[in-house]
Length: 230
Image (cartoon, rainbow, N blue to C red):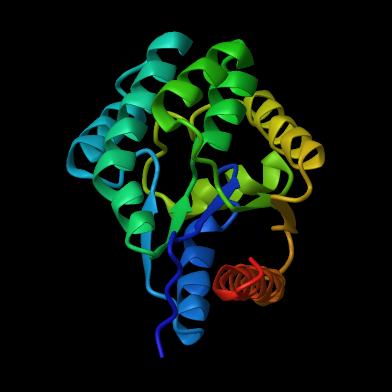
């Protein structure tokens, strides 16, 4: 039996290259479907026709020398389209959304990696997203050396970000961990250096806890609303 909430839930997966996010998206989607949850899987940058075109521009290794601000604006332009065309309609329909990267990646990559002022990112976040924030964020954490080795092993050619230095990804990783530490209620840090099976088990366990909490809270709210004393 499918389960539907008045508003869906947004789950995001974050981490540097080679962290295994894309693989875990499929595992996570399978788990939610087993639980009767209708969902949409998507990614950033991308997730809608125009946003996918911007993704190609952002990842193209020929586009060297792009300024941090230009990159930041392109990321949020893609995100605005993604939200309008894919994410908000799904959430409004009561569907859950699993997104491979979201705004935490902007703070990590454009903020930590490129050195863009986080306050500028926050201004664009408020403009594009309003009050929308992920309900649950998995941070797949591993040393940059290991992540880049994995990424370069699986790809025939490196994209514009995969060509960055170890120090760049060390800064990205540091911002991810800082954000997770600052808001433990939303973030779950996963040891992505573990085996694929161990990582999947961590994700499964934590997701089941989140589902239970979500449905318990929903049932409590429904019961209160239907009570003559509410």
